[in-house]
Image (cartoon, rainbow, N blue to C red; front, side):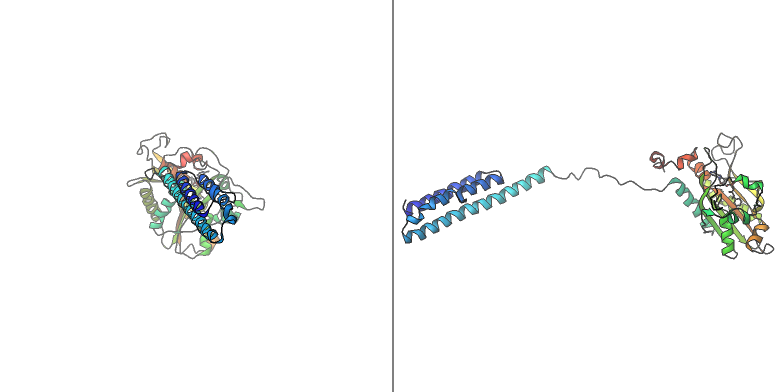
Length: 343
Ligand code: FA5
C-alpha cells in the first residue's frame, strides 16, 4: 500500500466511524465504536502497520493523515456523547416533571391540649382584673399544704383531700392553696395573684382524676369584703360562661377561709331549668371560695387587724368539661388523637 492509498483509506475509515457514531443511541455503544477504530488493536492502528515500509517523506504525510483521521473520530465521539446526555436529560425532564398542582402534604396544625387552652383562657380573665401569676412546687411539705392553712394535724378536713404521701414525709400537693402561703410569706400586701398548677389526690371516677389542675386566687388588701369576692367571681362567671350567667354562693367549710362558700353557676345546659348534667338542680358547682381566715394571716405574719382578703380555688377540668361538653374526665389524660384533634 502506498501513501496515497493509505490517505484515502484513512479518510474512508474516518467517514465510516463518524457515520456509525451518529447512529448509536447509547453511551456504551459510542465507546465501543470509538475503541474499534482508535483502540490499541483498532482498525486505524492496524492500517498504520504499513508505516515502517514507507519512505521517510511519506511517513510524515501518513502520520498527518492518521492524526486527522483520529481527531475526526474523537470529535464525532465527543459530540455524540454530549448529544446523548442532552437527550437523556430532556427525556428525564419530560417523564419526571413535578406536578405542581398536586396538593402539598399539610403539616399538622398544633393547637395545644384542650386543658391548656381552657387554663390560658381562665388566666387571661383574671389577668384582665389585675391578678399576677404565682407558682409553687408540686411536692410540698405538710406545713404549706395543711398546717399553715389552718388544718390541725388530726382535723377531719384532711380526709376531704386523700393525699399521696412520700417516704420522706413530704406529699404531692392536694390543692394550689399552699401557693397562698408561699406568696404571703414572700411578699407584703397588697397582693393579687392567681396560681395555676397540677395537684394530686387519691380519687378516681368519671369526674375525678388522681392528677388534675386548679387555679388558686388570692387578694389581700385593706378593706376587702365579701362583696369584692362576689363581684370578682360574678364577673369571672360572665366572662367564662357568657353574659348573664347567674352565680350562687352556698355556705361551706374550708379551714383556711371564714366564711367559706361553694360557688355554683346557673346550669348552662338547661338555663337553670334542671337536667341530667345538673342533677335537676339547675346549678353547677364550679369552685370553692371564702374570706382568708385570720389564723392563716397569723401563720404568715400578716396583721389581720389591718388586712383582709379573699381566696378561691377552681378545678380546671371541671370548667373545661362544662365549656367543651365533655362527660368523662379521663379523656383529657388518655392522649387519644381522635379526641385531641377536635380542639
Ligand atoms: C379546694 O381544693 C380548695 N383549696 C379550694 C379553695 C381555695 C377554697 C381557696 C377556698 C379558698 P375542693 O376540694 O372543693 O377545694 O376542690 C376545688 C375544685 O377542684 C372542685 O370544685 C373541683 O372542681 C376540683 N376537684 C377536686 N377534686 C378533683 C378531682 N379528683 N378531679 C378533678 N377535679 C377535682
